[in-house]
Image (tube, rainbow over all chains, first blue to last red; front, side):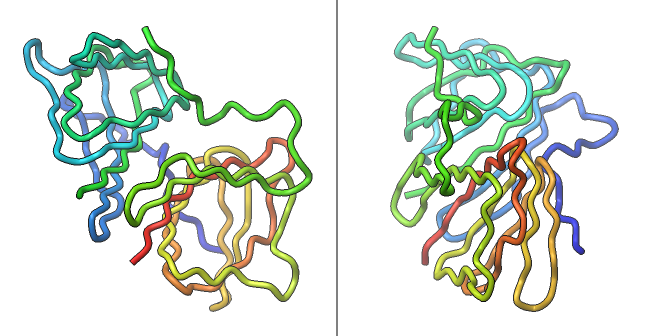
Length: 108
Length: 108
C-alpha cells in the first residue's frame, strides 16, 4: 500500500513570505500550492497575469478585489476563474488557519 | 461582495451513480469534480486514459489499484498523478462522507 503526498501537510515553520510550490508542470499547465499567512498584495499593486488561473481556496479565508470594483470573499472550498489580464489584488488572507490555495495556471 | 461557487456544495440527493461535472475547459485542460458514494470500478475493468490526470481527494477515503500491483490508499488531501495509459481501478470509495475528487485532465 503506497501513501501519496498530502496537500494539507504544511512545513512545521511557515516563512514570513507566501509560499509558492509547483506540484505539476506539463505543456501549458502549472499546478501550484500557495500558502498565505496574512500577506496581501501591496497597496497600488495588482496581479496582471498573462495566463488564465482557476483557483480554489482549500483552507482559510481570503478576500480578492478586482479592478472593476468587484470584491470576492472566499471561504473554504470556494473557487473562481481569473481571466488573463483580469487585474486583481489579494486584500486579506487569514493567518489562523493559514490559507492554502490550489491554483491551476493555463498558459495560451 | 460577490460569493463564488463552492466545491463542497453537494446536491441534496446524490444519484446512485458517480457524479462527474466539468468545472472548467480550456484548450487541452479539463477540470472536473467527481463525487463517489461507494462505487468502484467493476471487477476486470480498468481505467485506461489517453490523458494525464492529476487528482486530489478532497473529502472521503478511497483506494486505487494500479495494474503494476501497487495499491494506493487516499485520505483527505492526498493527491497523485496518473500517467496516460497507466491502467488503474478504483477499489474503494467511502459512502459517508462521500468522496469528492478534483481531477485535472491534461490532454496531449
